[in-house]
Length: 418
Image 1 (cartoon, rainbow, N blue to C red):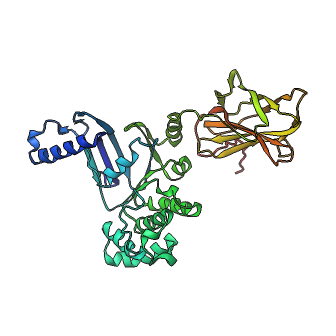
Image 2 (spheres, rainbow, N blue to C red):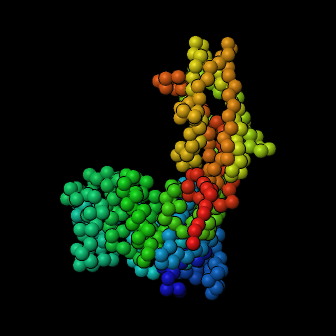
Image 3 (cartoon, rainbow, N blue to C red):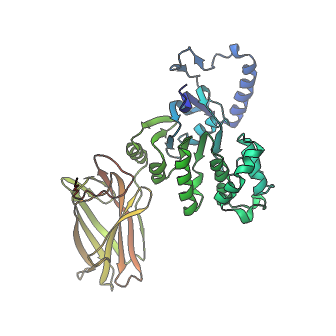
């Protein structure tokens, strides 16, 4: 095994049973057969070639949670595991941490393993934070002397000094994450496994954790599970997309992996809120020869224009209102606000029947490649009331030569002097 390869997975597979009764029976049967392994025809077979593993057959109510996964993580690398809920990410991390055994394949780990898989994992709720620091560090294999040397740094990183002697059962979930991450990170294990726990911490602590993970990567291998694609872009240099237990994408093109991740989600359903005194009657978006109406997807090439035509109806006696469009990314973060030149909504009035058609053009759309949704927001003229907010009115699929973690791509004029 290459000295720099700290994690190696070879054809790893794991199956579970949907039925509790059958699961208990299969478990008892498995214990019995483990005592007489040659009597079990369903054991995974290995023919001596590390590239070839035969999978055991599935029994009634069983399914593959993971199937035939192979990868390596070297020192100084971070592998991002992404996929929708139930794709197999946490199952894989539990196998890597030794909490579960694979039904087929092989896991090889080199060095100490630090894991943040579940918020309360490893904590004794009736012990204080101080006592749990020593317990957690001991579980990671560190000596009393090593823990003493790092104790102050752990407490400082966790930002929990004033709560250190309080029982952990009185900690919030965010406080437990801070304590757990501080222990694992400050003791610098050779392998660090992180499963979505940073989503619980506050913004300042998440920023600190991401910086620490980048520092840890200099001497460690990291596997990072997250539903936050900006975090994946920030710390990972390789990504694996799991879908129904199999690898749907694996490689160093983070943008391609994330784009494929988003493709597994259905289009966002439209939602209409507000006072109801305004309604969107019709909308059309056009880019080149591509056209989309309400609820549809517009295919857009980076740098192209988007022509928007929208028909709005206002109920009497309201005659004046303001319109703006908000473009959201798949993380539900607003990335663009389309306004008038005075940086407020576009002022409009209606005809006698209460309807108006408004047209505008978004020139040279410079959004990064990916999927976006468009909301139309109609306010009264004083911004005191939302007359209509129509979310996911239309979706955009922006195509670029290469995806980026940034929302907006700029291509200014460059010059250099020698």
